[in-house]
Image 1 (tube, rainbow, N blue to C red):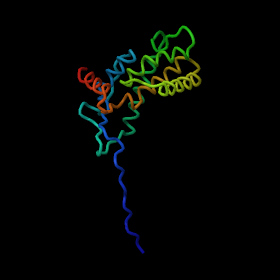
Image 2 (cartoon, helix red, strand yellow):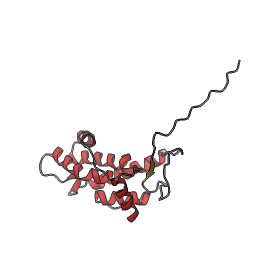
Image 3 (spheres, rainbow, N blue to C red):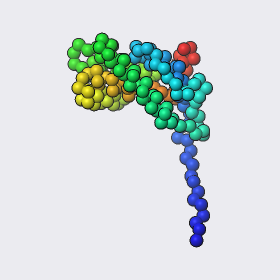
Image 4 (tube, rainbow, N blue to C red):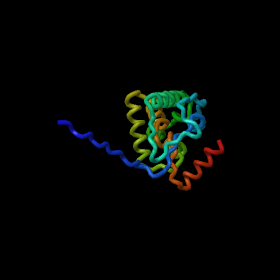
Amino acid sequence: SSQPPMAIETCAPALGFRVTRVADRRLANLVASLFDVPAPAIVTGANDVGRFVPDQAASVTSAVASKLQDVAEATAALATQAGRPAIACSGDEAHCARAYFEKTVPRVFRRPTDAAELDALLAVYTSGREIHGSHAGGMGLAIAALVQSPSFLYHLDHDTPHERATRISLFLR
């Protein structure tokens, strides 16, 4: 006996707002200005009109994810070279890392950050410090995580004052 075909349920989009991946050129400029490194060559296909919109399928391919990981790792390597601001420290290294993140992360995420986000990033720093055996290693892993973070790579259009300011700043670049 043959079974009737199973109905495939589709999920309603979980987001009720527009989500846009930052365009490659803008992403390169942001990386350069935020981490004081040369603008990387980024070619993922994200342009000024590419966006993720509710009710329309969109995906990030493994090739795009791999390119973004390469950019993140290269950025982290450059940002943590000797004498760079990201690793400058004249005291307790964990305290220096927290101070750097408190200053940098709100700019990276283009919005205020909370203690839980900073604590999570410090956990990444601590893991990197243990794995690589140095402050620079911890900072490098945390910077790579920031550059690959959805809060950095995507613009969420909630129409808050911070989002409006972000749209204006991205328009003016």
